[in-house]
Length: 329
Length: 305
Image 1 (cartoon, each protein chain N blue to C red):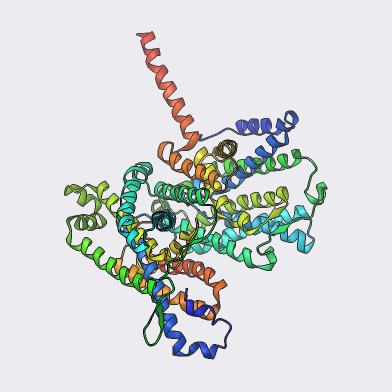
Image 2: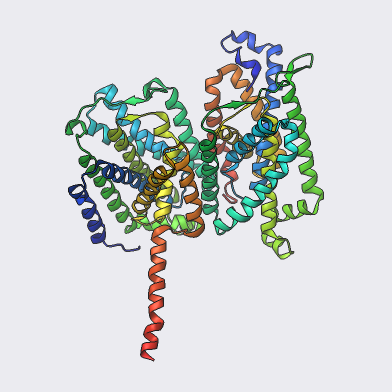
């Protein structure tokens, strides 16, 4: 997947952008919109976890901060929805920078980093479930105002396009990172932190920058979530479900690849819907499927779908080689 | 949480400083700290040998509590009797999980082990949620509210029993690690994996044995908890975060550290409950956890995380 051409990204996005022109079923559009949302959140995780090797188990902290900021600014302070959306992303990035600074300054990595991010998400969840500002246990309901100026729409298609635009931006950012000096530093930190430091990479700043970008993307997902569903509470915003989907999408799709989170999100969500179809909408069942998926992918396809595709290509070209040789011999 | 502290919150602070309230609070803290210590013991044992943090620890504790609960409801077994059966059962479960799931799935990479144990935690916790819904269940045993009079304080009998059993388990664990061949192999692998392997020790077997011992600790903890505590699909998480705090505080991999750290955290929590009230108690655990991680672990993570 290295050196993925811009053309392939543009082609995929253009194809996806045409979907609402042919599909009018709101069920299908809703499914795709949610998959795009998870792709966005997962792309955020991928920047830090996939490229930087810092596995966060608490990306809900950023998703929820974005969602709550967007909702609170609109309902309590009368801020315009678009401005609220932008401020939500900025707030999420700030949360990422602060948590990152604390964690990386203390030298936390590996399991410790996973633990501390998990703990931050839980602290935020408990605070949001008691603080009056976040609507405590009741949550926040956005006022219905179906105007584009309020970032609310009559039909599903505009939401789909906005989600797609966000995913497109995240894909281009990640591709730009992949081709930049910063991206090379980030991968160096992932592969061997001590070696990277010895070569003069400022490990702390690289990790902090990655975490800020990562948090901003995931926060954008939270902002979009609240505009789309018009409701948020502490469990939805900061609950473990989103932390798990955030890491599951890139891991299933192919960790540390540009398209991994998008591929993974579609597959994960499809499997989730399939479970609901087969077994009914029982609490916990979708997460049982996701958890099993995580174990199975790590066990049998550690590089995700992208890795499987790569292996298959390699095997096909290897299978063709002997035939060619025989033909020549 | 200090039972004595609960209804005292809101009274004047002068009253709270009197020894007749402080001493029972401290004793109660020691009792609940003992259970924390046992959960932490399992965690620290696994960390000390496998150098991984087992994210499935909480979910396994929850599973053990459900097992103890239904052993009583369906089979009529007293939790203390059920412990005799559940401990070997969970030992086998832990052994199998490490040997046949975590070990092979992780391909020897720390990042993968993290993900696999997280995946297992999600599966176990949500399978329990699916099977038993989010309902909170309690056993109403007739001895649950018995107390012993120590002269300075009344202590619930099940907590005193729990304290005694934890001390006993810690002693037995020390003896196993110190005297048996398996224990020696475990210590050898913890100190120097490659050397142990060269000396003919089956490292994968030792890993699985350690994981089994750690999981067996959870079965005992569950049976000690269930007479006075409730069970629901998320109950293990709170305990495990406390256990993580203890393990980081007491030093990763140290049995004595886990024991002392557990008792210390129990007392701190009990006193916090007394002075700050119940609602802040839960958040106090997390905040303490984050602070301990940020300020205590910098010296530890250098080794291997």
